[in-house]
Length: 411
Image 1: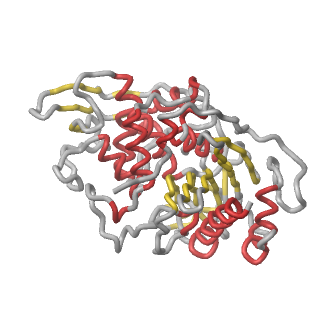
Image 2: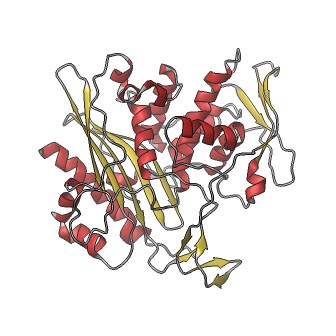
Image 3: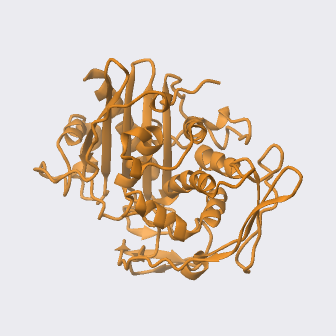
C-alpha cells in the first residue's frame, strides 16, 4: 500500500515562509465575537449562510476556533505557508479530549531516541507493572498479532481509532514531568497534559506512574523505567463552564470545574501537526527529535484508515473508514475519497469536538493544514450525554473541511 505523506520534507532543502502562530488581532466583522482573527475564513463561512450563519450569529456559544494554513509550492517543490485564523484565542479554554494523545505518541518516539539504549525501539516488548491499587498492569495485548504490547502498537491504536488505554500507557511511560517540560521547551507553553483519560484517578494518583520493563526477544531486560511521582507545579487555573453536571446520576446545579483538566490550545495542535508533517518548517530548537523512520511511521498511521490496518485489525462496522476523520467527513460512515489523504488527530468529549489535520489532494495538487474546535453543549449540562454532536458539531466540521478544500482548489 502506498501512502503519499510529504516525504519531500525529508529529502530536499526547504525554503519556508514561517507563519505567525499568535495571529494579531484585526478588525472583526460584527457578530463574530472574535478576539483574534483575519477576514478570510470569516468571509468563506459567510458566503454559505445556509450552513454557517446559525453558528456564527446564533445565540448559543459555540466557541468555534479555526486555523487554516494554505500550502503552495515553488517550481522546486519547496512549500510556502500562509496562515489564516477565525477566533483564534489560546486563552479561551476547551477540553482537548483525545487530541492530547498526539503529543504523547510523538514524545514516546522522541524519548526512545533520547534514551539511546541498544535494542530499545518502538517495537520492543513493553510490560507495564503496577505499584498502587488504582494502577493496572499490561503483560499482553490481544489486539497485536503476536500478543506483545509495544510503543509502536500503542501509537497505531491511538492514531487509527483513538484508543484510550493505549494513550494512558504512553502517559505512564513518559510521566507528566517529561511531557510538560519537553513540550514547553519546544514552544508549546500553553499546553498542560496532567491526567490519564477515562479512568477515575485523582490529581495525586495521576502524578504516580507505573514501573515499566522493556524486554528483548529472549525475554531479557533491556531497560527498566521505575515507578515515578511527578513534582511538576501546574499553574493555578479557575475554569468553570456550563450550568450543571450529572454526578452519580444526580444533577448538580453548579458549573463544571475544568481547572484540573488537560489543556491543549488549537494553535498548539495546529503547529504540532505541522511540526510532524513539515519538521524543516520550524526552527531547529522547536523540532521533535525524530528519525526519518519515526516520521514515516507517524505519517503512515496518521492517514491510515481502520479498514486498511492489518495489525491491529478492526471491524469496519464499529470503526468505519471515516471513523476519526471529522473534518471533511463528519461522523457517519462515508465513502473515503482515495485522492485525498487526511493526516490528523481528533478529540471528542464533554461536548467539544476538535480535529487537527493536514490534507493532501493528489488529484488536484492541493495541500493545506486545517484545525478546528466547536462546542456542542446547548443545555450547559455536562456528563448527561446530551451533546449536539450529530446535528451541529459533525456537520460543521464536515462542511468546514469541504469549504476550505473547495476554496484552495478554486483560488
